[in-house]
Image 1 (cartoon, one colour):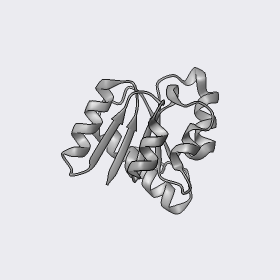
Image 2 (image 1 turned 90 degrees about the vertical axis):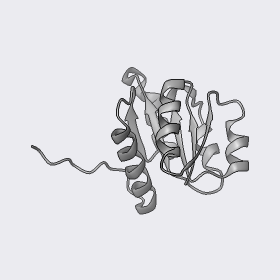
Image 3 (image 1 turned 30 degrees about the vertical axis):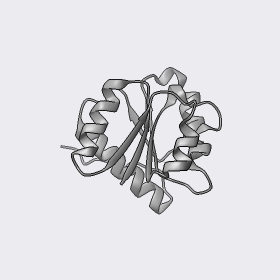
Length: 130
């Protein structure tokens, strides 16, 4: 799988890259949105992971290009939920709160985004209570 990570947080990007590359996925990371759309159009990733703070209106739609590709949205601040909500409406498939401390959380977020994109639903399954 080809994964494009758009996030200025180098720690998260390195954690995601290490995790995904150890599982034979190809990863490209950009820390700014300036040339991200051109890179995505050229490279055609299977999944994008995008930080909310980099998304201006329309960026996520642009990253999708002509067809929808699964997108994991990242946010560390819910007081700007309006921006995250706009991103979700543009085509987000899963939302992860930062900081993401566990690779299990990243893995689950990717799986849910892929499932939601393929089925056309955007709901997290209800976890069983312990």
